[in-house]
Length: 225
Image (cartoon, rainbow, N blue to C red; front, side, top):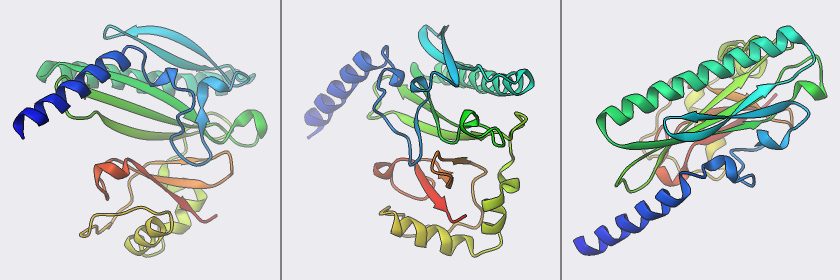
């Protein structure tokens, strides 16, 4: 049995050794959630700049919105996330040899409605050499029409949601969406993490293992407007 496990682990390691240099950015068919699509497809909104980060080429999105102030604020926020990723990767490598990559996706777009801002989603993935599988973290960034990031509790749909029974809402919505939660799941407070899809819906984001097994991945629960 142990030999079989070693063989499986070795095969997984080989696969990630091949895939990691390419990165998730190469997979333009990957969709992180409802109302999203890979940011690299949206040429009217953003351009990409390739950077060498920790020995890997990472595609960094840059807003090219016609409003200079909006563009500057959004790009500074993105730069902040890039810097966080670099520091996290350094810390992880200080403990174990770790590869990392990232992908950006977009939901709501300012270019389609000047009275709103872009809603971006960042997926950061890390793989420890010899590990059974990678771990991923998803993070939403939603901006207003001036380029300021909208805090979780100030998003209108979420303001209404916070006045309801949170645990009941999570369990009911997850079941409706077909997710299998941990049996002992009890949500007292929502994660400060969301995005707005191109479909206009707001989605609350839960990380892997937050409320469900790894097989469920991260979970995006839609909020009624």
